[in-house]
Image (cartoon, rainbow, N blue to C red):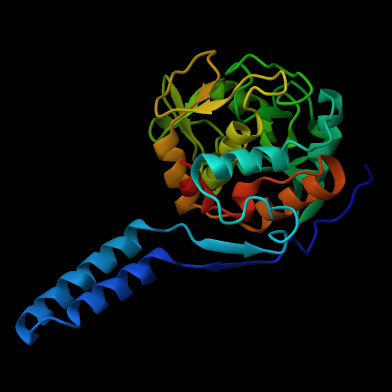
Length: 293
C-alpha cells in the first residue's frame, strides 16, 4: 500500500448529551405542582440529582455520516439486539495476512508530524517505520486483545485484525504480555506513564479509551460463528488462555474518560478505506458501549 499522509477528513460526527437534560426536565416538571415551600426543597434536590447525573454520565449520543448507510441496521437498538446488529455489520471485512500487517501499521499509525515514523501505542514515542522487528529498540505488532486469550495466535482473522493491532516497543510489549487491563501498578520502563502489576496492565492516560474500544470491538466482531473463538468480556483479571478479557468495568470507565481523538478517528477511517473495509463502531459511537454492556 503506497504511503499517504494522514487524512484531514474523517466521518462527520456530532455529539449531544441526552440523559442529564432529560433528568433535569423531569425533575423541574415534578416541582411544578408542589406548594412553594416544598417546591423549593424539591428543586434543590432535583438540582443535586441532575448534577450527580451529569457527573456520572459522560457518554454522549453521536450522529455520524455513516448512520444512514453503514450503521442503518443498528440505529435505535440497544443491548443484545444492538450487539448482534453490529456483529453482522462489522463481520463483512477484508482479511489480511500477518505479514501484511507490518506495512498496514506503517500507514494506520503514521506519526502525523513525521511521515517516516509510527506512534507507539503504550509509550507514545515516535519511532522510525524501518525499525520494525524483534530486537531491543524495535517496534513490533501488539495484539491488544492478547492472542493467547482464546488461543487464536496470528491466524488470519482475529490474529491479524488491524482494529486491535498496534505498533509497540518490543520491551514494553513483552512487559504487557497477555495481561488483562486494570488500574494500578508500578511504572513501566519507557512505557510513557503506563503501569503494571502481576496480573494487569494500565496504559498511559492518552490511549486508555483507545484500548477499551479496541477490546470491545473484538468482543463484538468475534462471537464464535465463523470458526474463530467466541471472545467475551468479564470483570476480572488473570483470565489466562480463556477467551475472556477484562476488566470490563474499568474499560467502560476508560471509554468515558478518554473519548476518540483525531488520531484514533483517522486510524478507523484508514482501516475502513484502504484495508479491511469495516469500522470500529465504538469509535464512531462511544455511547454504544453503555448501550450494550
